[in-house]
Image 1 (cartoon, rainbow, N blue to C red):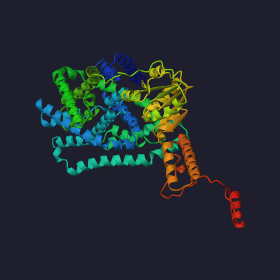
Image 2 (cartoon, rainbow, N blue to C red):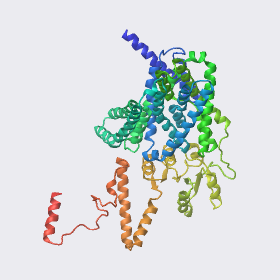
Image 3 (cartoon, rainbow, N blue to C red):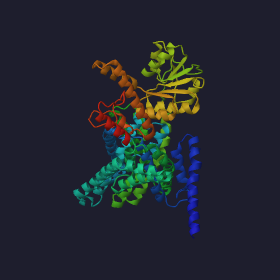
Image 4 (spheres, rainbow, N blue to C red):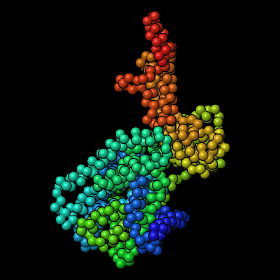
Length: 611
């Protein structure tokens, strides 16, 4: 019997893997995306398809961990300062969008003849966008770090937070829910806030020492287990306090985003995240009750269209009111027009307390799942309907067959100055940039700049990188500079690469990418500025030069330490202005100490022997 059960379980595991492996490449080849492939595969092998699985709920519960780990990795990319910078988008844009869409969708339900409580629950559930689908779409399009991508992430974070007050409202709207005391509701809110504060404190003071101890043990499998422990433990803490698991994982990621172990954690979690996220979409597909759809197809079809259209209109209106461009507002409306996985939680809670019955729960769940299935198709349709933003290349030559011995990528302020020594020495320089207006302006000053994107391998070949002696990366975006450096080093390993670094963190990344020389764009100018300040205060020019050279040496030592130990290391090389004793002198003494009398000589001799 045990062998039969084990064989049955193995059949299901093989079916899951086979469904994903077969469906996803086919759907991606058709241009429909991996998400739709997973959803379709889930429908086929689920209880309402060929019936490999008879119960999808348990799989969906496990597969939600994929969303949790996805949010953890997103959090690792979101430093606290960056998150703080998005506070207006989270609590302003996010709250306004949730409020407007909830009202509009409640009106849709009431227009269909349903009571206000049921209409509100149905609409509020649909307001909560699918974090998994939208995040995956943003990642596939490479727009996670873009400004419009960050605004969408902010809204999703607010929706994650909104699940707590929405669940409280369901308890209030339930028959007999008004009997729940105000103190009980406040207690629930307080528990949620306390959980957030506790997680922040633990992450701030415990996680880094914890991983440092484990790193000293030099056991890779323990680090992987610890990474999973942090992600799942944070998710569990938030779930027990009434918040979403995804929110807990996201906060843990944010708190570790500036840790020296960040890249190690990301590498450890990534394989689990990818597999479980695919499993999540498969489980959502399995959850689509085709019997309910067949029995209520007219009602479901009407409400899928009505909810998606009305929610899209609400999102578009909010975006335009807050000064977003038409194209961005339209894309956001299509991206976020579907319902999400949190709707399942909300509808289940409403069914438990008697606001809706089991049939309504199944119908609303089907509406949400179908909207999730339609989202990738809606995005494909949007791509064909809206014209592409294309820059006019009138009067601009595209890079092709360039033969310069030096290739400059990026011709802004930095690139223009960096080109001058080379041009004065008569070196043949090829220049590419992807800013048409800058290319046209440069032509007025006697520069021939070609249009080309340095992050594309075909453009690098066309720009003559394979024939050049050196490449100068002078772009003004840190992530782009690192990406170009990695691409050039991988394709042309013997080519000399010199790169402009936006800041110290970028400089460290560029060194790891293999560049031969990097320069922080403000470093040398700041040294000259500081030296001029000393001279204006009457310091001898020779002493100024010596001090500046010492600062440069100390900065180099600090940089080497940071390469080995992380960005937070090397603080002992800095000179602060608080008055805290520094264990090393600001400047290296020019001459060794000399004794001026016998007593001092004895003290120095004793110190040398004890050292």
